[in-house]
Image (cartoon, rainbow, N blue to C red; front, side, top):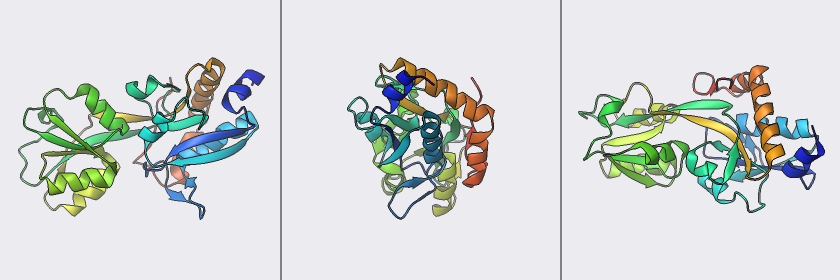
Length: 242
């Protein structure tokens, strides 16, 4: 630990951690004050403890809003999925956890595999600016992406507009498929959302510290213990060591 790291990450003496409240696997509950409880908040606490500073959790409704505030001085670290669009404004660690992203199709759909989705005429409902939504923006070539606000919004749009495909995190789709008898979740995944820790660009010492410390938290089993503690085993997995 060097003074440069603390100065870059917590210049006020408090680490301000932006937490994405919409990820129900990483934020499994809230305190009476509305602060996040779960894997993401616990990772932020571990970082603050390692730095020897206080922690302030900053709840954000969506990951896109965290990315929007990069470089504005509103937060010191942001715990969100690492995607190329966000990496233009933030420096990310390797992932500490992964979540499968896949598709759901309505009853009677001719779509059988993930490879069948990216074809002209297919409309994909997706939560706008989600990590998997950003991945789809970079990779879908023929189908039409229809972003909307939030997980509930993407499901409602899928149902109300009778769209061909709903994109989402597999654990959430397992819940959504129960609401539509006959609907199916496709086997496999189109991506794995890489949950990481980001900091503002230009802070080289901070980025190096975070990268090394996240690897330590994976290697020592800390991340795995958090996944078990918060009851998301089988839905959230520890990312591979880098």
